[in-house]
Length: 382
Ligand code: ADP
Image (tube, rainbow, N blue to C red; front, side):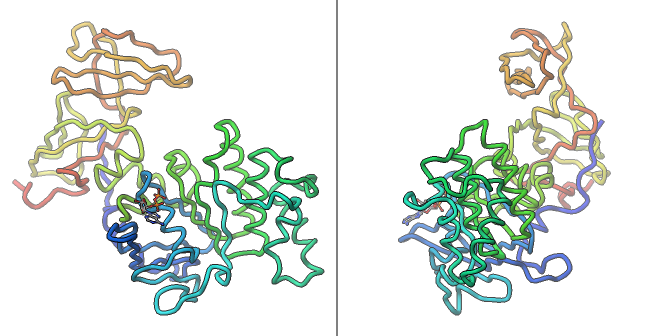
């Protein structure tokens, strides 16, 4: 049995991202009602977003949704059409304009953008012209240690692996001690097997410096595993902001639900706090007493349990081996499909009749139309 729906609505928290940070501290970076169009194409629409000091915020969304434009607006590489950008107490775009080179933010791009004719140490020292000359070499040594490249200071970029180049780019961005680092798809040019390690090292280095970071990615795993919070963007609009668990487990709408992970939807019915669908009782829904409503229930593959049962009407349709887990596609009597993750070693052959249930302790999300429901609407009262 399942059921506890969240007591607070993520929609409410998503609707007020410009509210003061916990404790009322000034955010390290704040975008306030920022809008940017290219011609008549709106790339970023009235976005409010904050990154607290020391916080890592990941920004995720499909290609072309405006992620890079958001980052470029924060960096000063684009000017907003309206709205304002703040770095701490300093307004840098809006009623005044501070150019990128005077914003003192660190920038890391996918292509690393190292100077090929300069060695590692000189690449890193490049951003330190504001530091007294005598302090530059010690700072270079310090950040090289921070990113674990102390031995490579005299190498040239072409003598480094992709992961090492990425770490040099990070060291260069962190060297001037920026309060904010902006990273645009920093890991996407790395090999899959290198990526996890470089990600972890990058995050560790950023955490050590205490800089706030805004990291743009299109990779769900990255967004879920790296950030303190993540912002999901669609068509230039922030759909939801919150800690990864909140966004994944209580998405505010169908887009966020589907974008952040595999999701199947079944027509369902709530009556007096009991949620049923064609697989039977899905869960209890506390707080939904004396209500009745047709809804849809979203099920993630890890929430769906299967048990071979010769008399069952649902049938395994297809099996995908993923190594540690095996994804089973199951056809229900209605013709709809649900997916179920099974442990490595479990493989129910296509054609196997299975009993489909919801894993105890799951908290399936309910939707009305495309919007998630976190409390019964008044119209559902009986
Ligand atoms: P993302 O980083 O999410 O892939 P972008 O921020 O790069 O998206 O782009 C958002 C939208 O703005 C896209 O439709 C893109 O084609 C458009 N766009 C981005 N930069 C420019 C530009 N310099 N001129 C015209 N259109 C642009």
